Image 1 (cartoon, one colour):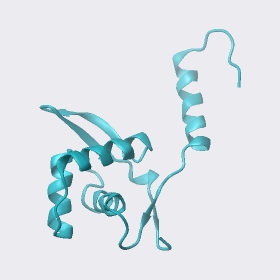
Image 2: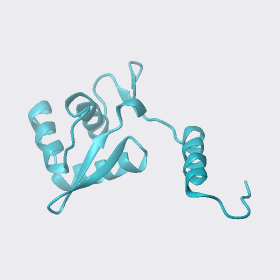
Image 3: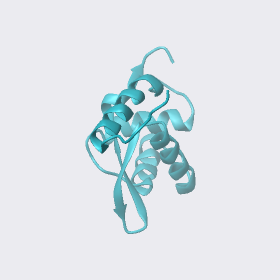
Length: 113
């Protein structure tokens, strides 16, 4: 694709939205088991569908739900990866912590995985 000339910001945003529909693959949420990342994603969708959270919040919820430890740095890495994939969005900061929100409409729950 080649774009020439000046483009108004509104048209660029529209083009980006259109490209995201074609380029992004929405990761499935496994129905059961899975890796720590899979379980964290399922937990985020269920516990924080419309709430803002930090890696600290997510780690505490993970440990409560699955009764197994997970380091805060692992959770922070997973949240960054999920944000890069378009499943989460950064919505600001709480002190030094990054705040995220789940884009529920971007996540597909898969019973086959």
